[in-house]
Amino acid sequence: MSASALPEVEVRLRGPLVDPAQAASASEVLARVEGRGAVRVSLAEVPAAGTLGLAALASGVRALRAQGRSVRVVDVDPEVSRRAALVRLDQVLGADAAGPRRPSGLDRLGAQVSSALGAGVVLLAMLHDGVRHSVVDCASTALGREHLARQVDQIGARAAPIVAGVTFLIGAIMALQTAYVVAAYGGAVFVARGVAVSMVRELGPLMAALLLAGRSGSAIAAELGAMVVYEETDALEMMALQPRRFLLSPRFVALCLAVPGLALLADGCGILGGAAVMVVGYDIGWATYYDQTIQGVFGRDVASGLIKSVFFGALIAVVACRRGLTLRGGPEAVGRAATAAVVDAILAVVIFDAAFTLATHRVL
Image (cartoon, rainbow, N blue to C red; front, side):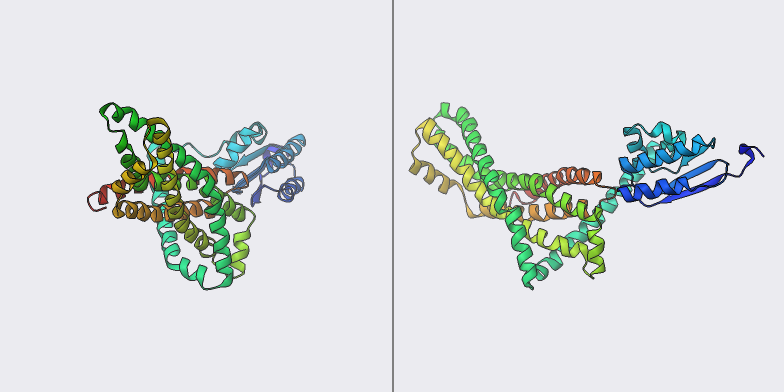
């Protein structure tokens, strides 16, 4: 009987092909395929594959083809297919490894809408968990208080120097640009009011939130994503701990405390930067600059900035934790999750800031 007349043998690989043990297991499975007919290797249950796993798979395929057998690799996840093409193994795995048919524009739109709705539901659920459980979880036990203190130190205290330096320079730049326009009309003394109000109401809280979104949001997403990859979250579930609640609560509270604190620091440094420019470059006395600042800033201005900053912290926390805890794939997905967390957090902060300002500009 010819090889083409023999029944096709199907081999179904299961689980990710990421670490050496998984790669070796896949290679052994292919090496034990019996018979002389064609072989159909299904990767329908392989959600992720690293370079080592793809190399082992390609080695097994070559060995079967060296025996004169026809080998097809089918049901390949698009991300696995992309990784195979990246390391130039798509030719070895065969044409069937190119993945499923390219979806139509309507299919892609539907998938994006569905993904956005799902992400929105997850974010609302995590925001609910953060508000409901955070205070109880972080204040009721010594372990919770210790974890919260560590997060406040990492997220807030260690970010203070960069926030202070950046906002000092922003305040100085604002004073220079404003004075360039108003000095010709003898209004340089009023630059203090413009810088102070802008920093307190808008730029201080916003810059603190954006800097924390880039610095701490990416770190949170990467840390939680690594825990998912190495199955530490599964271990928490085995210990009867809710991973989302256990990991979200201290970070949620820490960011809700850190952003307002850093916003106040940013306000002071921005005003100080403006004062340095005006005192040195325009001969405005320190006392005069201070008086103009006090006269220009009201309690509602400070309240507006602080209220926004609390919401900024909550948004950064839930967006970063969501990106980390919903990560899918191997270690290479951790970097993508960190990048996506920064982009999503910045967009969320800016959109909320615009909505909050439009809704309260007549009140605050």
